[in-house]
Structure formats: structure tokens, C-alpha cells
Length: 80
Image (cartoon, rainbow, N blue to C red; front, side, top):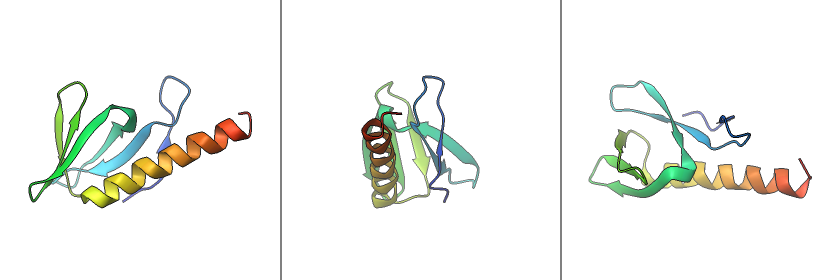
């Protein structure tokens, strides 16, 4: 699992890398995540209505989003 952040086209770091069940990587805009469910697979539902099933646990996804938010707050505090 890669906890690094990628730049989006809007000048922010909103993409988190997750793993689909077939082991392919996918970048998800963390600002668009509406719900995360374990059914037992982890299903992300975006505000657009799209759904993604990923290998990471609900807690892992939560930690990635928190890490993203902290990075944004740090940037804001440093004036960058």
C-alpha cells in the first residue's frame, strides 16, 4: 500500500492510491469519498455514485484520508 499523495489537476494533493481486488492500483480522489463499507470487501462509494471495491480495510482508507488532510493543513499553515 502506497501512502504517498499525488498531485491532482487542481493544485491539491487529493489522490490516494488503493488496490483493487485484482491487484491493480487505482488513484481515488479522497475528497469525493462519501462512504466506506466493509461487506466484507471494502466498498468505496463516491459522491458521483461510482463504487470501487478495494483490498485495503476501512481503517486503512480512513488513515489515508486523514494523512491527506494533515498534508493539506500543513501546507496551509506554511503558506504554500
